Length: 182
Image (cartoon, rainbow, N blue to C red):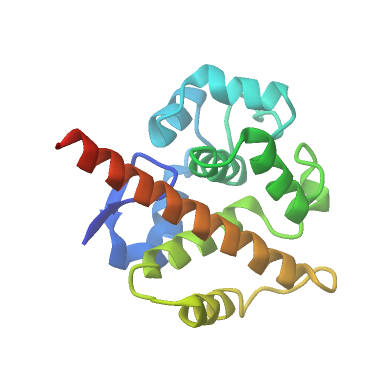
């Protein structure tokens, strides 16, 4: 079953969610993505990404190229901004990773966070209630090595919020499509 990979314009088979990280890794073999490539992958305007850099929501590109962690931060923000205000998105990211412009205080790499989320979102249609979501969260974060005590709990809270926001976006899009078909 095909789906649009959350926060991107890329389409793939939902059952390949565990391999999305490999797909992304291949995109970075040349040393990173240019701004126009980031815009293509995310569907965002280039000036939006530049604005986020200027506002300190993510570090500046290195040599005019964005690394995987930066692109995954952009994708996470893009995915969440459909339901949350940008300030709420930044607050959520800061809750987990401290100052957004400084990667040295991160509890989890933005790429790792994104790929955990993709695996969780791919299962979202297969899980039914709160217990199933919690079991999936526990399983997906089981290998996470806490850099400080309590980091895993923070990670689970953030992933739970991300999943809820993504589900809300999915339902909103479906409702808009139904309204358009009236």
